[in-house]
Amino acid sequence: MEDMVPELEDLEERGYFKKQEIKQIVKKRTHFEYLLKRPAAVKMDFLRYAEYETKLESLRAHRKEVLGLQGKTTLADYSIVKRTHLIYERATRKFRGDLRVWLKWLHFCKSSGSTRQISRVLTKALQLHPAASGLWSYAAAWEFEHNSNAAAARTLMQRGLRMCKGSRQLWLEYFRMELMYAHKLRKRRHILGLDALPGVTAAPQADLDSLSDAQAATEEQTEAQSGEDAINAVLTGAIAKVVYKTGIEAVPDSIDFRQSFLEILSQFKFEGIESLQQSILDSIQRDFGDTEEAWDLKARAASSDQASTSEAVGVYEDALAAVPTARMFSMYATYLQDRLSQSSPPQPGKLSKGQAALVQQQLQLCKRAYQAGLAEEALLLRWPELAVQAGDEEGALEGAAAACQAMPTSSAAWQQRLALHAQHATVQACETSDDSGEAAMAKAARQLERLAVQAVAACEPAEAQPVWLLAFEKLTGLGSSSKKLTQALLHQLTGMRQGPTRVCLDS
Image 1: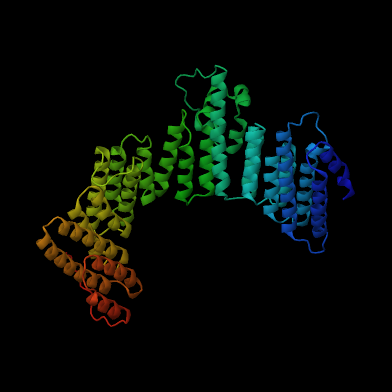
Image 2 (image 1 turned 135 degrees about the horizontal axis):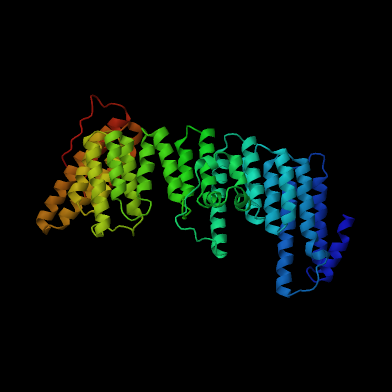
């Protein structure tokens, strides 16, 4: 405790804290030190102590800015940060196996600008946690982004992959780093006026067929080794391609893993990216060609320019011919919906030409899936919603009826159908004259009541309640009695229903 006397005196002399505040700081630090000296020290005590010192440093920095204090650096300017590092060092000695403590220390190093300390902390952390892939990724990113040392970052990545075999995160981050490296080199050459390379083509893959070869292919080394061809290979993402090939050898059976490579690749736009994307798609088609996911990725890649859906639609149609499954229909519909969502929010009955085309394509797809008996629940529930967007009320009722026929026990399908019928009946009643309007309302209420009774009887007992509540609400709005509906619910909940449920599609 006596070691902090000089720094406290300096903090007071510089005007950062008043005498009374210094006393409070001493009191608080004394309390924390007693907690840390206990035989059974608690991790949270170390972290609270470090958090207190971090906030204290933030207050000091703020006051320095407000007061406009200038001059040479003194003990008060760095003593609190130094003390915080000592607290984290004591914490990691006590809880060296807790990775979260190391990560908090690294976060503090970065936020406080302690760049030299980060390297020391990373070295210690990696020695104790060699199987933590996140640490290797963090260390490589630090070397690459802060120290601008691509060779060291690449070495760290490869060491991490040896220690964390099969780590998908490391492979993906390694792939991203190599693309960033190629992008950075291209920008550098552009600034230096060295980018006049018309018709750049990558070097043959035989020149870069392993990670060791790729590591050697930096800009400075390749100029002496392989000349302009090797430089061009690096600039067009050849090292990233080697990383991908080696990564899928380590994790060969995951299409999601390969999709992640494509997602990373979509963030970059420079020469060679399209070739690399095609290589990835070819490998997916080769290894997973008979799966729905492979077709979905191929179709989405065909319209990556966001210009038109025609190419993607063509691929999806080929996919349905090759893999006619419910999931393939759903993926096709999801793609069309994604494209619709990219435009301005569609207004029911007020669609633009492009939006109307996408909605109609989805409606036709829903009908095809239903007729083939390959429609999943989400697709069938989407059918009436699309018809409403298109301003086709009859089509919405047709879709709701089809959903109930295909899924007779689905609570969601029956609720959707009841809501649409109630809305349709209300609109029709409002459009007629006063006398005939009351008759139309009564007729609509009777039809809705029959439909509601069927719905409650069709659903499983555990799912009948929300259907009944919705029907009760809609019938009350139409001024109808719900006696039959209540009897149906009681009949369902007591398990007295006999015989199979008959579903009527007539409204």
